[in-house]
Length: 452
Image (cartoon, rainbow, N blue to C red):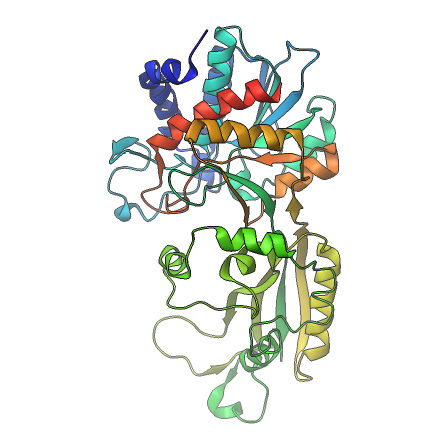
């Protein structure tokens, strides 16, 4: 009988080289100059799938970057699992803050340093390597489908259309995603909830053009002043969102859920250290983890108006803009929240200004179905691999594709990630723990056995 721990350790060098080959490709989806590199990454993932024994592998073109798909369907009586990941990465800048080149992977201090190491090339490659090993040994007991996209870092612009037009191809029993983090080193985690997202841009105008502040100051309205006045109405003095109806569909945590969150070993001091913030802030009556994971927010993401260049220009701006996003919790409807925020902005807009609302959009929150067999199998697999009870966590961010899988395919999603919060995803010196690379693959091996 094959001992997976020994087998994986014996092949560790080859596994790392497979990952390093993928990390060397600068697949930056947000920058047009990297377009050919993004395609090279798609082709490299397709090649790895084929060499792993995955079948029907191909690049599916979209209006943007291609989707890589492959499948292994050899167990008609066992579940079919759709594994999702992405091969695109964030831009590497600022380059001067990297201690080694971002696309030349390097191992230091038990960590793999490279852009995409943890987000998400390292994590999706683990799935392919484990599947390949089990296929080669003739012991993979589940059916697998792989969907690896190249636009996650730019909002998965064309993925929903691809899913909607390939429902039969992507049919499965559930989805597994490894693109999330653990709460702390050495302790695995299962994420059972994500906040949703709703956002818009607003623009105020107070006149036809900017004016000289000496000739007109004190006699005409200032768009920047009007914007500040309007935005100040969005929260009360305690940090609670002051929009009528904003909290209508928010469901409070149960006492048991609050106790479970309180038992997790993340202190406010540790949270501040991770954030690099000077102090905590937020809605009263809730702990830090409760606010980040289970309470809705309304944030100003950007504000601009008038002259912001070097030196001084004495103008009265005629236009001012802001971008707003709301993080949503389960049972909140993005369209309803956007309508409430828009109504608030219109009713509180100063009479001196004209308001325009631009680009409203949103996705709902996600909550894993409690008691799902895959969730129980994942808990056991993680427990066996790490020798520690997994943390059951939520995340404050959003993964829009989870909503697409739910709404378009009717599939529940299991979020089993192996990154750590301090691995600099999206920042210089991004890295991935060698320990989690190893134990993560051991977890996946055992998970496929239990999931059958």
